[in-house]
Image 1 (tube, rainbow, N blue to C red):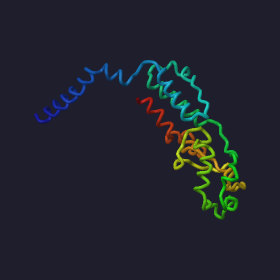
Image 2: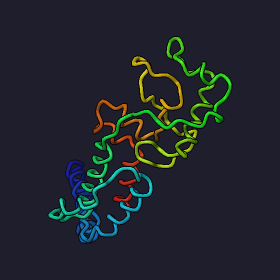
Image 3: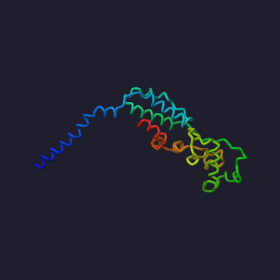
Image 4: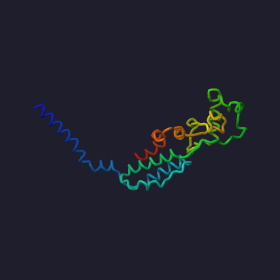
Amino acid sequence: MILDLKYVLIGFLIIASIIPLYIYRKQIYRRLYKKGSTKGFMKDCEIYLVSNHPKIPFDFSIEKKYRDEKDIRVKETLIVEDFINQYLEYEYDLITQKSVPKESLWAGYEANSRLIKDNKRPIDWAKRKEAAWNRDKGLCNRCGTKIKLVDAQVLLAKQMKDGGGFNLENIVILCTDCAKVIKSANKQKTAKDLNITYKLMKKVEG
């Protein structure tokens, strides 16, 4: 009798959970399977990418590659993945940067520009970073996004092992995302940790 009551209770719980699914099946289906146009989504992505990464020539005609996909959420995700791949694969070389007027330099600049033992940064490193950041108007050298001085990443155009030093012409200012991409041995794995990925995926979820 106790065993029978247990089965009755389990059966009741199963039925109780199925009934709401049946009643609201249309709403659930519409939420999980979205149809519609991606026109607004594409425009939103274009505004964001052109405004925040102006140096990268994104291809905004990619929507036609996914025109056979009926689920708009899946289509938008595929489009975002395509944009991210374009960002990752954008060809960029670390090259010597513009010099700054000599009157902008400070005492000890030349002496501290030379390679220091154990590759340590010079004592005026913060001043050099700020000077390079001002030279580039606070923009990432690779993608062109606006960055705060505190968030700016620095790479050397010519590595120390190749004779590079700490002179301003050798200092390249980058955003966090671009620095990660340049240093990454596995770009696809790095993609999930990028701010641009987060920003674009939020547009899909929205």
